[in-house]
Image (cartoon, rainbow, N blue to C red):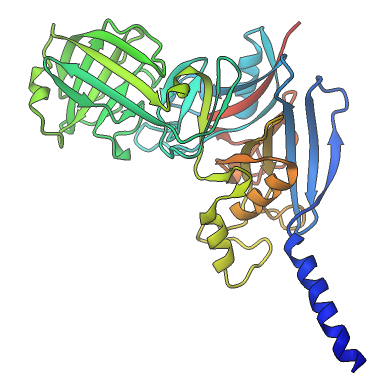
Length: 400
């Protein structure tokens, strides 16, 4: 009878223990002489074999800043995280202390489009690419406000009495965009094919393009040859041959019109630096329900196992998170069984909660995951070398 009375107690204890199985890890502080308001540490996850590197930036330290950097200062092309950071430091007003890889896009050549971003990028107040995964974006306004609400772009071009919607800024034609505005930030030309659409060269538009933009233009030329040159003082509008609208015939040399661009909600029009990822990890301190459902439905969890479903696969990961006091940049190493196997996105989100984040987005991972401190790569990228990427997230410090 005594044995029977003890069983419920054991069951209760087990139930109390099991929910906290995913929390916890060992923190090893790195770089003791960092600027005030910045903390960097290695985080050894004690549930599975995974090593993460974390930077925590105080939101109240006025000399520290969140920025983004574009590879090669243009959309086409790639560059290492260290090189992007070095070019930013060379401007002389701030130095880059921490840098990690950024968003998603085309890493292969893809008919000349190697380097094209497929997510939001705003740099120094210039809108370079528009949001795609509208729920996985992060931006900082000119007053230092953090934004991670869902964001969308509304862009139009007026010609005569008609208006056409612009779907994309500096994107590939193959990404489903049927009307694209190309600025000099793309590169020297549009890289489009012949007979797939019409291209209109626009002059008189003050550049750079900004998140809140309304200006008149002049039509300089109209062509169907493709791969139109983009000069430094012009933009090119590409319209797919699939678009059937009477407005297209009104684009003729010498005709004037107006371009309008804005982001919604309106506070996004004040962003100075912004980046987009794929899939929001945390919102109001809770893990994305999509990730929760996928994690719970997984029949057998095998630490370190790779999976065709990338959300469930243990991979190197990069994430950006924040709370009311801090910004977090996190890189998890992976694909190295005796050192670090990587994380699923659910596990990454769970660890971010443990670190203190309440909001977080997923950035590009895999061999791109790179963590740079003071111009040195401190993590172990899975490709055994520093990969060239499309853009980077930076923590900069004012130079006194």
